[in-house]
Image (tube, rainbow, N blue to C red; front, side, top):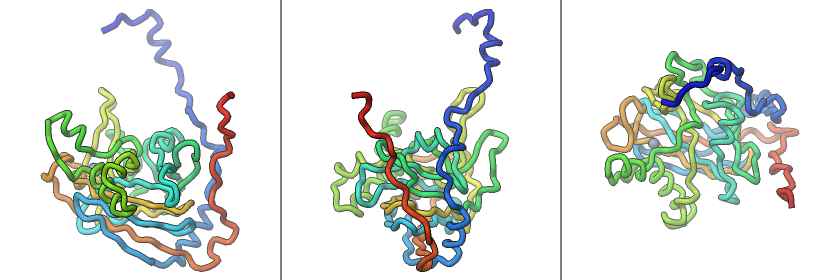
Amino acid sequence: MTQAPADAEARRAAAPVICYPNETLPVPDMALYAQALEGAEVIETVLAAPRDACSFRVEAGQFFRITSVEGPQVGDLNLWNADDLSERFYSGKTRALHGTHLTTGERMWSAFPHLRPMATIVEDTLGWYGIDQYGGSVHDVIGTRCDPYTGNLLSGSQYHHCCHSNLIRALADATGMSLAEAEPHVHDVLNVFMCTGFTRDTGQYFMKASPVRPGDQLTFFAEIDLLGALSACPGGDCSSEHSSDSAACHPLQVEILAPREGALEGWQAPARNGYDRSHGR
Ligand SMILES: [Zn+2]
């Protein structure tokens, strides 16, 4: 332990400052989205099988809805621009802008140099959960995705149905890429329905039994044309462990919904970020 300076308490007492005050973020027109969703029809349904992933395509201006079916289950979500896989979800910047967990009105932002909203959450049936006594909440952007490399590092295992591998297979199947070509495109996820936080005493990432029950849903508005992949995590409800076949696992359903013609009158897909990219040269 290092020696604390004489003014340690005073230094600790400095007030926190929000890194990115978000009052100037572009505000989504939630009333317009809600109205469009009301008249929207399901045009496609896909299922992520337990310990496996599915892919789906959503046009800008459509919705996609993830639903818990059969039993409590968390999902790992990746999003790409359907026409340019280099534009993909940026979990770290989304966390910096909105906080550790996402809910209605918050958005999934794309990586540099694009940095624009890819999808906006329009409905969240777990919105009531809030932050529990352990500091846990749902739909986090703090975890990465369970993966076989960390399992191997910690226990020497060779497990093939972690979300990382599931997402690779789903992306390869959706695009015709090989597994090796697909792997670098898989990225840190939105942990749908997962309940997580950091312990106050040691700062460690924790998970706990998800409050999700069959029928719970998380619904998104697609701001740009999207290719998505969703893995039904081998952790199931993440109440005990992941990266093995020991947890009870359930499927997750993804529905694509198209609004009625004219329902999005006046709406425009967001433009790419306006920074000129000259970087001081
Ligand atoms: Zn997982």
